[in-house]
Amino acid sequence: GWCPLSPTGVQTTQLLVEPPWRPAVLWDRVTLTCQGLGTAGDTTWYKDGQHWGQKGSDHFTVTESGTYTCDRPGSGLSPPVRVLHALLVLQVQAQPLLEGDTVTLRCRC
Image 1 (cartoon, rainbow, N blue to C red):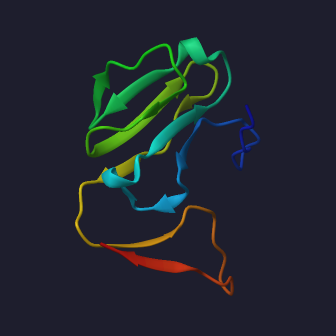
Image 2 (image 1 turned 45 degrees about the vertical axis):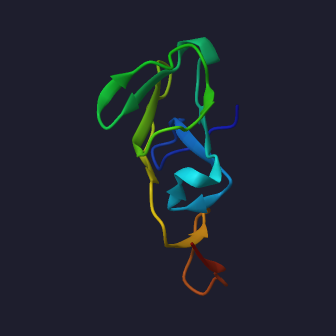
């Protein structure tokens, strides 16, 4: 899979969110996909900082709220993604933003 380069030029592990809105909410049927070096079968998942039982797959649909990270041996630990169980949420598209960009927000309940 595609991995962005860090400032030092080393590929890093990324955790992709679908649908692409932040914060992610449980009732959106959120799918997390781990992208990094190595094979999908080498992916290790963590939930709330603890080893979590989804090893061997690079993606899954979230069924519990919490903070998720994934690890790939060739590119390390991903940044965390938090999935909320919230009744009212203000979301922004999950993409890098720069000053001056037009931002779409959505309020959902």
